[in-house]
Amino acid sequence: MIAMRSFAGRAGLLLATALAVPLAMAALLLPLDPSAMDLGQAWAGPSTAHPLGCDGLGRDVAARLIAGTGTSFAIAGLALAMAVGLGVASGGLAGWIGGRADAAVLRLADLLHGFPELSLAIVAAALLGPGTEAVVLTLALAAWPSQVRWCRALALSNRTAEHVRASTALGAGPLHTVGRHLLPAVAGPVAVRAALSIGPVMVAEATLSGLGLGIQEPAVSLGTLIRDGLADLRDAPHLIAATTVTVAAIALAINLLAEGLRDGLDPRRR
Image (tube, rainbow, N blue to C red; front, top):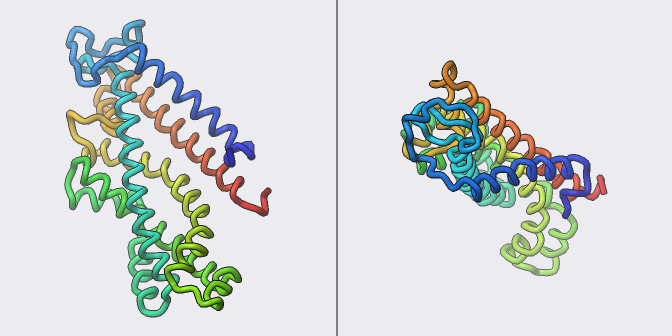
């Protein structure tokens, strides 16, 4: 595996395994409903039946953490897929064509890039409203400026590369040159940049949902767990502790894996 060629990649894989195995085992051994309530177990601490305890409504924290992690991963993946797709289409095309189209796309990206991604996401979420579809679109819009600038820079740097110029000189059309020579050259850097963005996007989703601008009940995500944990911080501190540690560990594991992937794809490091 390419990412395993560096220490960062191996450390990221080890941490990801350490997170995935307990979550998978808990899902198999404790197939609990994350929405099932038992008021008699309200704010119960960790036990054999509930390894991470229960929240204020008697819902199993472990079951909700497993469901919330899956939801946050799905949202981050969809948002990044939209952002990368738009970035490749708009930034790559603008960098390849140049001229006024390039200038217009760059000005728009610069305008949005002037705002921190989290601040931009909060503003967009406030305008679009809460909900799963809205938070996916919000995160995609917030991540688009950095993706489009990256894809444009890659297109500009590869437009004058020898293999691209040779293809054009041999009479190949624009579609053939882009599909057979440009896209394969930028696919690796784009994939690495997308992998590095998963962690920050998941943290942004957790922040939006924690502020009440993202996922809403009865759906559960890491952000809703943080919001519920903050509300019950004095009575049950284990709720917020379990969720924040999970978010931090997931972000660290993904960043280490992405760094290992970058090192593995970089011929200068090899």
